[in-house]
Image (cartoon, rainbow, N blue to C red; front, top):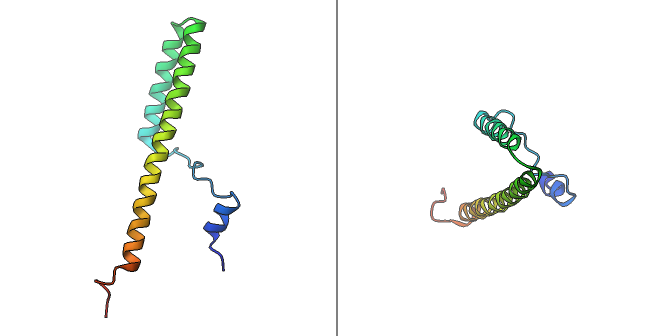
Length: 95
């Protein structure tokens, strides 16, 4: 019998990025504040400045994705190490 998670991962049905943040109060507050600040800033900008701001925001978003991937990788590797230790550590086995 194949694990549902492994099968979902293989067939592309497991989307790790599809997680709503609706219930995260801090996230929602921070996002709202950033959006409000951007709107205020854009009202004072020329079209050229707005374009530069968009490029900047895109690059910051991409950088954030790289950091998120790196953190995910570290967490995943740590979890794998813990799992391997739990499986193969014979020193604490119950007799």
